[in-house]
Amino acid sequence: MIESFVYVLCTTLPSHVIAFVQYWDYPWRSKKLAIILECINVLFKMLVVGYALHRQWNVKAVELLISLIGAAIYFYMIQTNRFKLLFSYILIVDYLMVVRGLATFVCYYLFPTDSISWETSLICILIYLVTLPWMLVFFRRMNNHIRQIDAAFLWRTIWTIPALTTIVVLLFTNTFDVNNAGKWQYLIARLSLLACTLAVCFLMVQALNDIEHKAVLEEKDRNNQNILALQRTQYASLQNHIEDIRRARHDLRQHQNIIQAFLDSNDTARLRDYLSNQQTTLPSDSPRSFCRNYAVNLLLNHYAGLYAKEKIDFEFQVELPEKLKSGESDVCVIIGNLLENALEACIGQQGPYIRAVTRLKGDSGLTILVDNTAPVPPATDSDGNLLSAKGDSHGIGTRSIRYIARQYDGKADFQWENEMFMASVFLNL
Image (tube, rainbow, N blue to C red):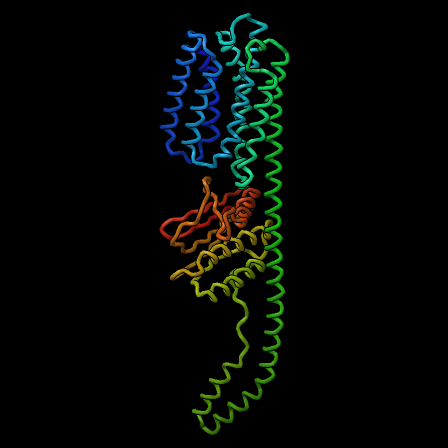
């Protein structure tokens, strides 16, 4: 009986260690309650497996049933996309099954005992000691990739690929039969299970990364085209402005003669009317200078015009040098997306307000903050990712911002509080 307790503990506990390590920084309903429930689940499994051995029941079926209860606890406690969670959890299950299968195979040749024994537990511990540190790093990195990919419509179905791979390898190689534990086919099946699942998952995550990268590049290209269009518009505006100044300078001598005539005749009333009318003929002001960086200043002038048109109060405190050492186009994409999102959120509001601030620390640390009034919190999915107001999919703008931030070892954060939506981005340029 004690042998079965130790065996269950040795083969089950590492899976919970992996789960808590890779999901620890996720939002949980209650981490403390989750730990308590999983500990109860492990103790319950130890007792039931021991009783099943005594009654000569199908131990593997009992283990599977109780393991499903343990998995259900994670799926309830961890507040994230259920399909992402299922995808990554399958990797943990496969790793656990491979370790147990390898331990059973080795024990079969070294010690002619049952699969549940002191010797099997000891071999499991040794295998975990050798492999677990490496696997923890792998699972952590893989899970970070999975968490960052926001293709919700793909996650609903893509988890079935590693799941079916696992089922096919286990069922069609008859690995559930303990009598096959000493066969080489048994070992090869278990190792193939892990290799196939890891390979499939790695390729799928890479493919999803490529899909997201392509979408982000398309968004960056759209923003670059917008900046180019703004440059053409400003160039034409500057040309017209220069012509207006030339014309005004040409007419200045005539204006001076007329003013002098009014002064000589002491006709101040007509002089006042003339000067008032002459003000309307002066050329319009040139574009405002919000910051020294040319491209960003173009964007700020563009959105300042849109905000004024929509009667949105705004404040820009943007301090950027004429040239950034790197990432200037990416900075434009981020600022453009944030200002556009703020505009869309403020249209139709009562008393809308937008504030944009940038802070450059040293030569590389750039913080971009854009706040806007938002009486209603934005729609999000189970991962907390923002949903586009134009449809039920994720906003490509916020996806671009997150993606770019990761490229510069930075972070993008979006929060809603007290009827204000606050976006903050940090970049290490």
